Image (cartoon, helix red, strand yellow):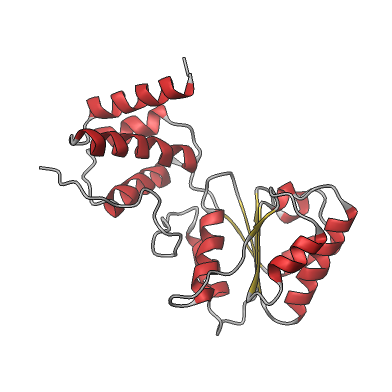
Length: 238
């Protein structure tokens, strides 16, 4: 009989909760190196499709650099509106420069120059730098050419967990984290009815998990179908 526990729906962003598969192993190894103060590597760029785990690794680096009980290092998404002054203030005294969604950097000369300058300050000082985006360095728009060249000097890893084997591992990892048993038929049902993005996969599982907890029912194929129907109705899907 399945037992029910009150666990957080979103696990902490850490290296231990990151799902390792063929498409993410190198990225995890490089991220651990950046998070280790004793490791000489100090520059990392991660790229890959949305929902593949890039943000998870950046936040894991932030938590690891903070140490036990410390405040996680600041992390900036280029999807946020910000100015050069905001950029400087965000990373003043920070142990690392952590920037996500680099492909979303606005087409603004001042921001482009400001990011290059703060990157240069951190890199020349030997402080840790980790950045992420959807695209390889040379395909990033609105980025200073000097910064593109510097990114290629450091560790570069593609993060991709969109194949079925990786997605299956992610579902099983999430289920293990919540200490619930998920039959193989439910795993396969979620895989074939969900998009390729990992974020969508996780959202589908969470819908099943929440319904299971709310109704105190085991996770079964009928329950998974009900959860999908409820989710579609809530989103206004056909």
